[in-house]
Image 1 (spheres, rainbow, N blue to C red):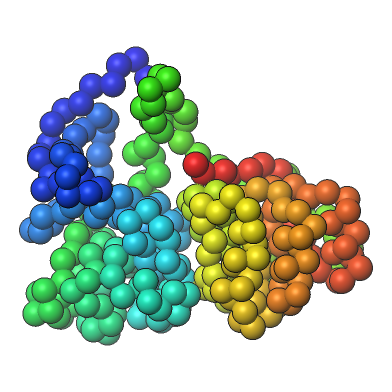
Image 2 (cartoon, rainbow, N blue to C red):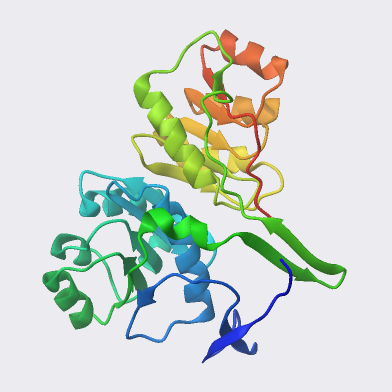
Length: 299
């Protein structure tokens, strides 16, 4: 980054809080989108997080729900409506409002499951879905940039602090077959591998310490931004639904984390790395562990 030049786009009504002045600016190429609605500071934050995850699944039916910067649910489905039902089920209370991002054209069936507390973002909307959204006063945004290209629009991440401005390249990490290793005696099924990749892709965009419990392409529990006991929190939330599920973590886990997971009958883990002590425990309890070779910590 040579210089950080802001090109003013528009003034926002307020920032994260009503007492904060905020504006939308351009520092680089931005995605192409259109909307007839006024968007807030928190709308832009929530849309970014939701579409980041949705872009990982651009070629299938995916629904992602966020509330401000928090992910409340994500799922793949046989159609968008199915994906939305699964995503809502992860956190039904917080799913009542916030951003709902979709990877395919929004249809009538899916639109009927939404309410005016939602902001919808999708690549296309059919006429019937627009009729329902307008009738129910639901705001929506059409993302004209292809989802597969979305992650290419952020090359650097910038945080301004009193100590100086921090700049790092964006995390565009992908799973590499040379680093993707099964380190336990028990090997995963095809379905377990697919669920583990899904969980890992969601966890990559969640604030550390990130724990995602998933099964059948659906998040069951998400722990985000907890500095300790993240695994225990996720397991307490998932409860019995964690049986035969996958647990993804953006950082290595402790023995206590492992024990909390197996008590809820999690069957597989996808982790950046793992100690020999945990591998021995996994072999003892016939669990599967896959390592990726790198962390995806998000602060």
